[in-house]
Image (cartoon, rainbow, N blue to C red; front, side, top):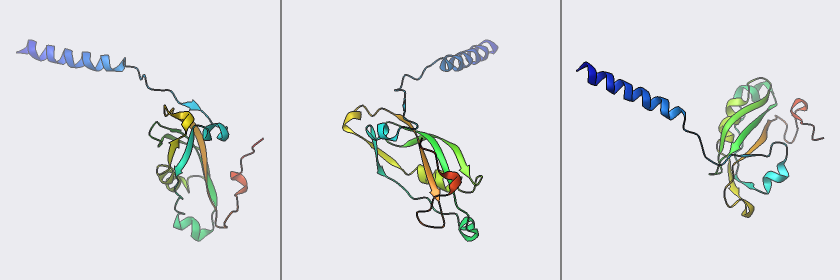
Length: 141
């Protein structure tokens, strides 16, 4: 009986070790960070979502932004979402992340293979319409 238990345990451990060596042969995303024009030749926004302004921030008149880096996967959804910058601190991160997850992109005719893409997106929060928060403005030079 002990021998059977030992063999079962060895097989289970062996299986775990084998799965670590499996490589992802998926299509690697192209990095379009900082090149919105090139991204738009491959993917276009088909659905966007405006984030909800956090009530506490609105009451206090706080404005800010969240800048993200993420991958548009083959299904046109944001994945591997990372915050690059959040002003002020984490005030708007939760609302902005929830909004970004609702965005959808459609591949263009040039992207019939649905090539994933790495890109960035900034979501702004301002108590005054069309006003940009000075700290959130990215130098395009």
